[in-house]
Amino acid sequence: MAKSVALLMIMAICYLKAIASSQVNIFLLAGQSNMSGLGGVVMNIWDGIVPPECSPNPAILKLGANLQWVEASEPLHADIDVNVTCGIGPGMPFANSLLNKTSSLGIVGLVPCAMAGNRISQWQKGTFLYNQLVKRTKAVTLQEFGVIRAMLWYQGESDTVRPSDANTYKGKMQQFFTDLRSDIGMPELLIIQVALASGLNYTETVREAQLYPDLANVVTVDAKGLQLHNDNLHLTASSQVLLGHMMAHAFLQRISNTSSLIGSQY
Image (cartoon, rainbow, N blue to C red):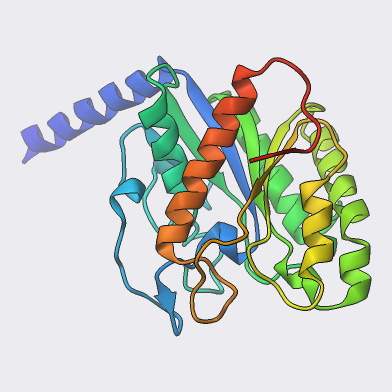
């Protein structure tokens, strides 16, 4: 028994040393339910099916709710978005796609911060969601665990209900991105955001703001046309896999191009 425990401790130490000696590329994940991921969730029950593209990988880590790094697995946001039943989101297929497309990336670290059912006003500076995002980001910085490469952002469905929310979305989105970059000390943070696949009466107003953000280093991936669950709101698991691939492609395209991109779309 003692030998087995000692062996496990040695293996854990070797694993941590391997991580420390590797480049860790960190991505923030924020937004609402389609980022936290409800793929495969029907009537508040997740079917438990994990697509191969979402499989765990020792080279993919996540920052848990306790601010400790662990090997990532689905549901990625289960300990963050605790008021809903989480399933498949875009984070794991994004990370796996990155690793499959480039051998030089090293380790991918994901920082889940999304929560269901919020408007852009609930991400403004000083709010709970904003403060939590900044807190978790600064925890990563203090740990000196790796380099923050980008934020993946998928939010806006809740802002398509009322015209007042939709019409003020662009300004609030720009302010959120600007404040976040300032508060985490990354004025040129790359943001890969998703243009909505679903919404209610004012979806196109919000999508217009997302497709044309008028901010540097904001890349937009368009989710329009991806398959939805029967609720006509949340992406299916297969759509989340496809979205993860799209976001990975956008990131790799962006870092391969040294010119400044404003409002690029994929």
